[in-house]
Image (cartoon, rainbow, N blue to C red; front, side, top):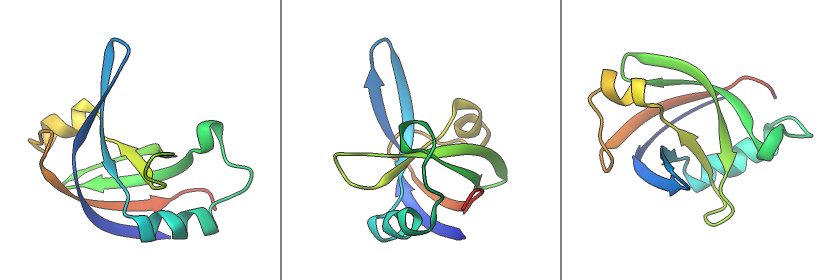
Length: 99
């Protein structure tokens, strides 16, 4: 399953660290929940392959209880390589690895 979407980068600050995410749209998040393997991995995560611009990597998406959507962490190396900052709208191609 491949999901293509656009979403703005946002910052989540926890403890002494901050993390940068994009939110997977609600309809795509629902579809992912329906097809992803049970039981899910730690924290309800789902393994994915991701492409943003010319950068591809493997990671996991995580459910966000507040929005009901999955969130995708975007690591610093990707943000630097693609010249992205918090607030930028990012085109994402996300492929589920285990389902």
